[in-house]
Amino acid sequence: MSWLSDDDELDDDFDEYDESSIRSRPNPKGNRPRTKRRPAHEDAQIGRVLGVDRGRYSVLMGEDTPEERTITATRARELRRTPIVTGDRARVVGDTSGDEGTLARMVGIVERTSLLRRSADDTDQVERVIVANADQMLVVVAAADPEPRARLVDRYLVAALDAGIRPLLVVTKTDLADPFEFLKHFDGLDDLRVFTSATDSMPLDEIGAALIGHSTVFVGHSGVGKSTLVNALVPSAGRATGHVNQVTGRGRHTSSSTVSLRYRTPEGSGWVIDTPGVRSFGLGHVEPQNILAAFTELALIAENCPRGCTHLADAPDCALIEAAERGELGDTGRARLDSLQRLLQTFADKAEQTPGR
Ligand SMILES: Nc1nc2c(ncn2[C@@H]2O[C@H](COP(=O)(O)OP(=O)(O)O)[C@@H](O)[C@H]2O)c(=O)[nH]1
Ligand SMILES: [Mg+2]
Image (cartoon, rainbow, N blue to C red; front, side, top):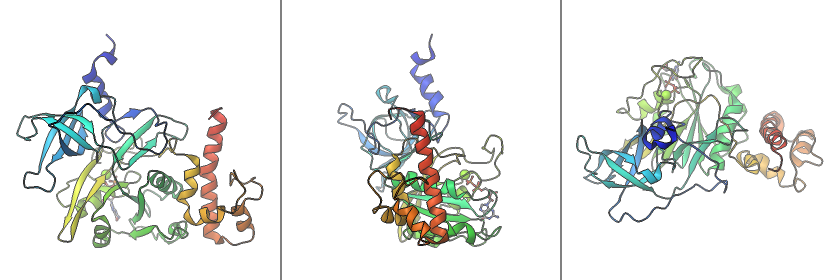
């Protein structure tokens, strides 16, 4: 018997990897989040998917009403190939009481406002869905341990902007190293809010204020302090924190699943999504032309480029390269142009490998 013939087994197999739980084919429409419409289940109620553990989803029903409760649900057979992730609004039928031992069933997914995806690497067309309906991304990077990598941050920025999600940046562990040099790399991004955090001085009020009214996904390499921040912001979260196994990228004491948690203050509330660390953040699903959009100030200059300009080092009459040669970009701008070109080169190489793309 083929393992494919057993739906439950298939689901379990896929759901074992929480963050990267669902593999699916790339979305042919590029940026548009996919939706699934299913035949009417007139009695369905809408709930918020909080997390998934081995094919069992926790779903918040009656959000912000006196009947608010978290229930457990499976997905209906017809949804078995539909990625369902943290942040999704699911249409739920069956026993939605949430009573001990009950199991409801998700029969549909409400159209998403955003979908954050990554591929394992840039040439990998298999995408992994991370979170649905987020409108902000807090990129978490450590000043040291692990060393900050500007290029990984650039990748997150590109993925966020491609998905229509507003990025924010926090540099943690500033007690271990001065982030000044690293942060220079992002000087040109005027609309990027940057926080710094240290063990004894976490900017909880400032980050908290930015969370209110939003759904914010925390992303970053393992061990940078995402869960530490989440626990400080959401005291009931109880997210595991700790050291990461350098070989597997996972730690016994490190959070390995993606969950939505409620941030609540007297001033308002929001949603925080903690994710496990990823070592790479492939952009195989991103349209190359959207990369430039992540470099706001360079995009303005590039408006003067010839049509179809690649902005790569050998591009004729490229306005970016000319501005750099005239010394108009400054050291920061040059570094960012370098970063932009590295990302664009990735796509140029990819196009060569995939004729007809
Ligand atoms: N020195 C220092 N260590 C921190 C800071 N924030 C987190 N850590 C430590 O870094 C390790 C990894 O943190 P964790 O929150 O699990 O990282 P995550 O994998 O991104 O969720 C833990 O041992 C934390 O105590 C910080 O600001 N300064
Ligand atoms: Mg963690």
